[in-house]
Image (tube, rainbow over all chains, first blue to last red; front, side, top):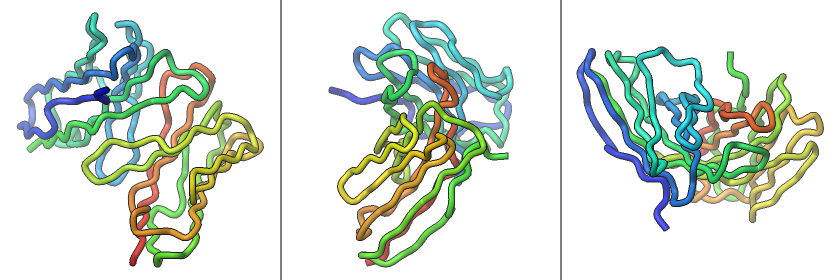
Length: 115
Length: 112
């Protein structure tokens, strides 16, 4: 079975541009979360979607938005890119809404460089 | 301020030595997970601990959740070069929490 797949794997954008990152969860998983990992730090939570509804939002500006589609895949959109948005963007999926001991699986991430 | 503090942040030891990585917080966590991350890849789950005082073993790795569920440790026995990587602890603040809070990671290097 395929794991969590993300695209693109690497991309370079210019300040002020917009970017869309895509994620396909593990088959049968209905929960998708997005995390930002800046070089040298641990991941930080951006969003969680479950059954196509936003269920959680981290401390990120409104330039960050996301959505989940009927097939449970997800997109993360970032507008008006800043240099500080350069990071590894990780998508994680789980079979249900987070609870104790629920296993979360991460994709390999999308490396975004803003120049 | 980091909600989960990992220590040490960097550790370089010789093959065969033992080591312990700590993950501490002033907050109580419903559960805590340990991940290992290789360069250019996403984190891979090693273990989840949910009960205060719980100890789990994964081959040469031993994970412990503190009695008060505020801290955790990862102990590696007889470290091998293949153990090299970034180790991350992550916790859920409450049952049903929608997000994981990550520590800043411990970068471990095992020298042959």
